[in-house]
Image (tube, rainbow, N blue to C red; front, side, top):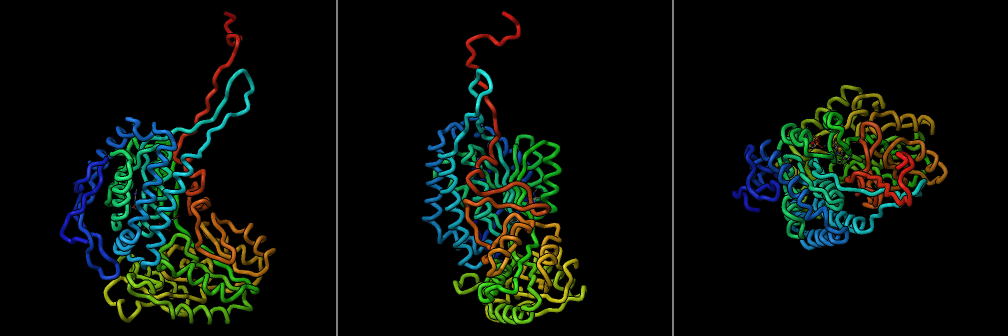
Length: 492
Ligand code: NAD
């Protein structure tokens, strides 16, 4: 990647530097800049929205037949696949995830476009049973300009998850990626353009959320916001949206419980719990960050788990053998370190980790060791607040009722994991856990066909799934008179 060249951003189909401040995207494994750009300015936001609204109204995209839009989206999927390795390497540099993970994210982005191409050409409106001399139907229309605001942890996948269904529905989309990870959204916009999405239908405006994101959400021509990020930001956006009576979807934070019952398959559970919290360095909304283990199994299980955590391969994200890369930034590592210190001050003890790792490849970037803290109570802040890093809190539980109460005792309700050989218990507990997703004897598995989202402070609305496309459409009812006679009212 050329370090000197200033990257263009995409403002309503025009590729040019932003008018905001200059900054660099940094490789978190080394702290070195990998791309230089100028952020978008608030004027750029206004220009992009006006151009997107124009492009939408021209109808070159929204008026295409669904199978024609689908064909373009299939091409996007195909082009992502053709450039998969290049994109995965770029994503690795932009946010420091291990290459095995960024390859999976790129594959997921391609699958998302393919899925919404199929959803687009097979989406049906309905004729509803008439109760008079009318043909009555329910149809869906695109909304106009949609804002997609995304975080830094899985850019290409979370951006595709919004862009694909919003485009499939016929809308223009403005992506506001996280300031520190702008590269994948820019790549997606360029690919959409090459595949045949008309200019102006996709814009990418990197820069500060509190300035650009805010301006975008408030803009009167923005008709819907799809947001993924922190709960506090989500609530701010939802307040603004309430004043505009604008629909929003919110994919927010989590503090997900993962539960190991006394009869669990221990090999499966150790692997699953480790993967659930330490993959993506714990920078995952669904990270299984609160562990509850049946008391009779607790000592044995924690010995196995902490031994395995110590053996995780932390280091160079370019090495396919690496399991955990760095955290996203120095600032974020400092936040994680403050939480570990808080855990200790609340009476917790560190079973493993609790420090920066030493050794080859870990000396420059923002690495933090896989960390397990014990002897806390579920009500402690360390067990209640999202850390978004490789920190697991582990607690024993005594019986099923206590377990369900502990697991549900959180403002978050995004995901949960249950490890047991007893299918009746799995069903009973799975149905009582309050969470958008429950994994039984597995964790962090996703399918674009299965709706995803959270309850309570973890979110609002759902992404993914066949009906995900309708989240980006307004519903309209049509009554079409078939009366042989005038309406019996004016007697004419
Ligand atoms: P964040 O809320 O700080 O930022 C998310 C996005 O919102 C960024 O693009 C940011 O620039 C923008 N933003 C910030 N302030 C804004 C404002 N006032 N108005 C409009 N936009 C604004 O979150 P983050 O630190 O980038 O990401 C981490 C958070 O994201 C974690 O809480 C994590 O759980 C959550 N997350 C949730 C999911 C999910 O699907 N539920 C997925 C990934 C991440």
